[in-house]
Image (cartoon, rainbow, N blue to C red):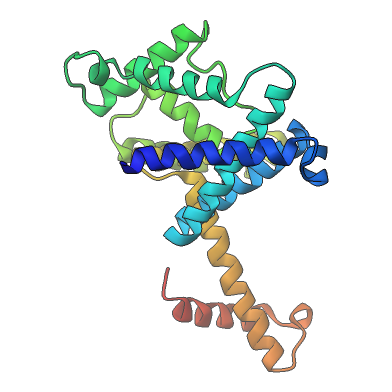
Length: 264
């Protein structure tokens, strides 16, 4: 039996487990859940999987992907009970979509480069969804920085993009100059808009460099937390209250933390 066949059996087993848990003689907690509560768990598990990727921890990632997969099956089971769709329809839908959107692979058409594949995918998606704009269908609950990244991806497929990362970086410089002017002019609304423009422009620089800005910011957040906790720990060792520490003292400890951290 091939690995794919074994995986198929294990997937069927997971479906049976969820059927049992939601059945009349199943688990009271699992039976109480609905699509809203499971959506919250689904989002949490997805973030934990992404975190495992960022930490380069394949063991944790394997576990988290299992949790994500379980939530997919759980949601499908809930909607099957409502008579709306089942996991079979979910699988049929994604299989058909992947084949349909890769005609260069499954229909014997000419080999395409990555840019051509993205353009074809965008065109096909726009056609399938009956959308008037390539920007229709963006999920409004996405983190704003990641949405900026996705917007850039979509319009880039239409050729509306900078040619080089350096050109996108120049846009960041222009936005900083506009922010400085808004600060000088004391125009609060303009300050807000210009900060947004800077973040949007940075997201596009990241895209050009093959970097997910959401992941990059997560790493920066984690690095800051790690270094600030170092400051707290060192002050605690000295019997000092961080709320009464001098800025110069904290700056000095921050530089220590950078050397200890081993990263910029």
